[in-house]
Length: 75
Image (cartoon, rainbow, N blue to C red; front, top):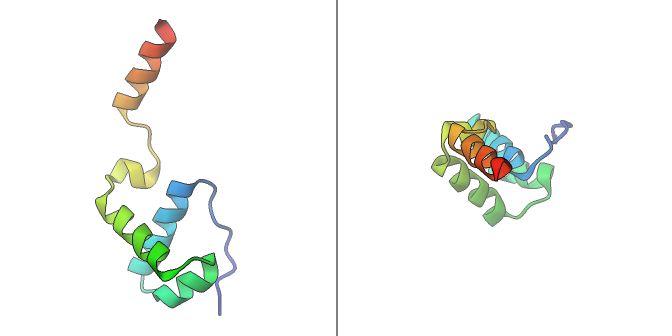
């Protein structure tokens, strides 16, 4: 039975949600059905999640990104 849950907005957040649901024990087949994605796309989301930092997974803005934006704004 597919879980009727709204997919959070934003592609990186969707990738994290897919990977976290898989880590929590959902099968790839269930995720394929819920998100209407292929097996390779689900596996890609899981691989992306493994390689990302904690900040990227949670969608935090890092200090480095903030400094760059500030510099561009000043000039």
